[in-house]
Image (tube, rainbow, N blue to C red; front, side):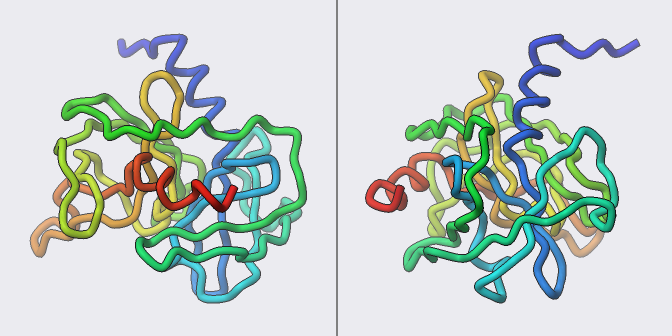
Length: 195
């Protein structure tokens, strides 16, 4: 039988609390609370300047049973696929961002919203590269889906080391298990004068 390490379960619980569902007119994605009144997500998700934001309420309830918070786009990066939403202040402790590149092989997990409509799901993987590619992203070994765009990538200390921005599509399988994240180092560079 597979038994989850108790500490990892605790870290997942904390990550769920700061992971939001971002609903836009044509779909949904994910965001991360990085200040009591700010959510970090990916720019390509935001087709409008106002979106509905949902926090985890203990179960992966359908969104029709919960009340959304209005999120308003207050910043879009000119350099990389990041955006910032302003929301009503919460009493939830925000993510702690690691501003260095993680070493290759670093174990990671995400909390996201799969393309199958299943909310706040956890996936595990590893950092697959130790250098940035031409799009300023790092390759990670993890299968993700469209609703995971904007999901936080956490290390096993529960700290935010990146944000999911894309996945590698294979013609045969639909996804070959590689995804791309904007690392914490780039997030810190972009947000240094914003937050």
